[in-house]
Length: 72
Image (cartoon, rainbow, N blue to C red; front, side, top):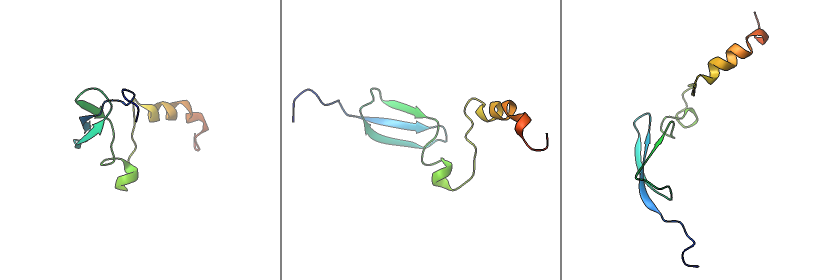
C-alpha cells in the first residue's frame, strides 16, 4: 500500500435523537457525531408507521397542494 494516502480512522461516538448511542470507527474528525434518525428508530427497520417531519416539510406540502386534495 502507498504511504500517507489513507485517511486517519478514529473511534467516534454516534448519538441519535432517540437516545441510542454507538461507538464506531470513522474518518470523521471529532469525538462525537449527532444524527436525527438511526436504524433503532427508523420506520423501515422498526416496522412502525411514523412520519419523520424535518422542518415542517409535510405541513408545507399539504398547504401547497391543498387545492388538489379530494373534497376541497
